[in-house]
Amino acid sequence: MTAALPPGASPRLTDFGRWIGRVPFAAAFRVRSTGWSALPATGPVVLVANHSSMVDGPILFGAAPRPVVFLVKQEMFRGPAGWFLRRIGQLAVRRGEPDREPLLAAQRVLKAGGVVGVFPEGTRGAGDVSEAQRGAAWLARSAGAVVVPVACRGTRRPEGSGRRFRPVVDVLVGEPFEVPAERGRQALEKATEQVRDRLATLVAELDSRRSTSGEA
Image (tube, one colour):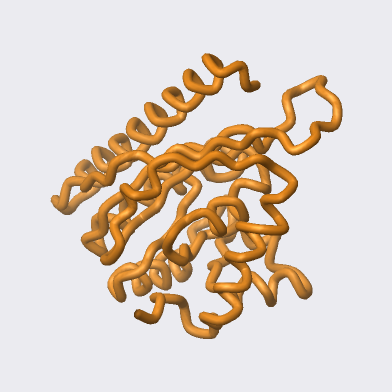
């Protein structure tokens, strides 16, 4: 079955990009993934993940069993890297300002049965965080997609620590859930809060597991 990708994306290059995230890129880390079986094998899915470092995206892109179209900050789409990101199906999003076109492109991917990835923590600005969370909820609601939360820890070097050799990166996938289908701003805020709570709970669970196992 052909993956649902934005116009201009190459399925062959997308597979190559996933291989990069799964093999040579992830070789710098010891990636431990749990729960990918929870990701539906077919149908529209909004994957929401926490954001600790630039490494999260490539690792999740390679680890997910289905191709994921991530919403990525526009600053990454420069030069050859930008060309490659577009060819592997990633969508550029402007920060700090309304940017409806990538959301509509992501919506089309979902309605074609694909998977869209959003980092609801956004970048570092509070406004970006709020907009990203609402965007994830809006996409799920408007396209009739389920939401799958994913927690990722270990990609960010702890403050004050030195260079690490192949640090352990844990990926924990939560159970799919649906957001309220009702229309209106109040319903969207309710859906946004649901996305936020489910992801925060999963991240806290992963942090607890890593603390018990002695990982930073």
